Length: 81
Image 1 (cartoon, helix red, strand yellow):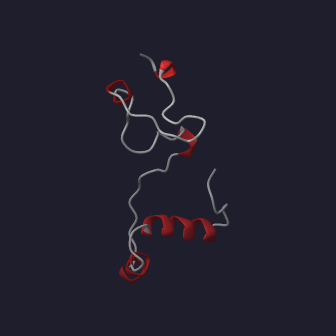
Image 2 (cartoon, helix red, strand yellow):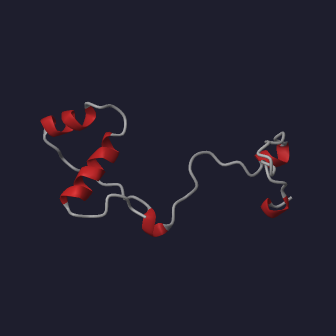
Image 3 (cartoon, one colour):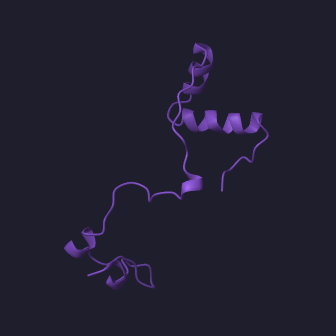
């Protein structure tokens, strides 16, 4: 069975059908891969301890917040498309 031959998991009424072993053959963990131009790049940056503490103070997502602050400081669009 190919991906195009599979029955949809959700019908027109929004009901989800039972998942079969064939469905699991196509299952993937995590997010779908992003296009080349949309992927973020891994880097290393040294920050002052107080800057890092301030970013981490609100918990998870501090790297996303740091990215948003940098985009704002550089005058870039708030949301990457």
